[in-house]
View 1 (cartoon, rainbow, N blue to C red):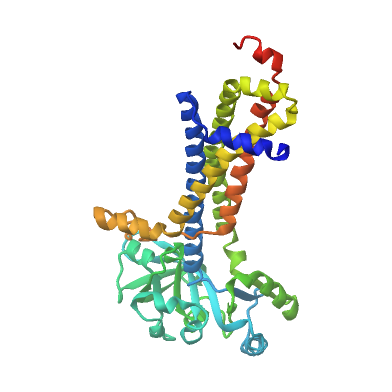
View 2 (view 1 turned 180 degrees about the vertical axis):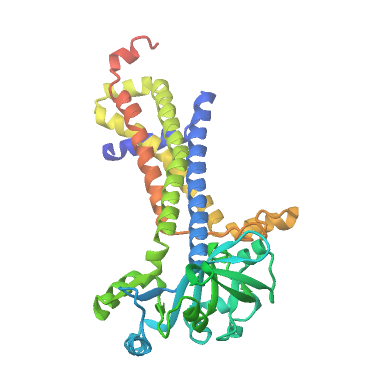
Length: 418
């Protein structure tokens, strides 16, 4: 019985009727603050996970999983491409590969020029590497024909330049042409044959031309810059890049999409950590409320503590009684908050959609934002971390008031009691 005494008395104090209304209010406020903090943190982390996955999937609609380049930037000839293709086809983790030429340029129509990354691709093989062809607003990638100098723009670029299919643009290359009349920047007229939209930042920074046209524009001759590779599992891009680097040797450089977009996803992960710490302040406030609640409880129960001590109860047992009470308040708040947070985190998109339908309001305007609905992905790892951290905070909050209770002397507490 003595072994379970702290648990029995601590829970009895928790559910017992109190004459002090203010004490009940502080206890309820501690419970509510803990539940609110845990629920808010789980929901916000779920939404941030949803945005990260949304951006991740949309970026991979344009960015290849792996890129293989010549380390000396001399380019690859057809014989090297065929040899690489044979080596890559023997790897079961690789789906397809496609040659490419990459450069930069300035596009101009009537207004301000737009800087873009020009990607020279083979439409037939590129369709097996990136699903960009499935995200065309107008036109088709198959319309990219060698010698016609057609170009496919992202919808942000097309909207900024106010161009439509059939318009001719002036492409200025970062090279100079020397003629008898002087030195001039190299320029070429290109025709818009399509517009793609993947709802990501790349919509405003990448344009596609046929690989043969890119070889002429950037004076590559019959060489290409490298190969774009698609994997069965994009998440295995970094270990696969290291494996291929060892297999192909030092003459070639293998990089993954994680290397190219690493700074973006690292910034998003850092943002998630910072937001988590800021919202963790709500849980810290709930912890301070538990401290206040227990301090008041200790003051109210001085007589009970004195009686227990005079009956021979050890001070450590007194301390555990109030630790049980405070931890129980925090645990119940965590339990309710986790249930609410998981429900809202899992069904966020449905809840927001229902709100939009009944109010007629649109939270995310698809013409302004990349998304038309609020993405969310509940990860149990986040739930465990949040609940564990909140429980530790609750336990730490009980230490000082419980220690104060254990230091009460029976004679002093009962001196003025009649």
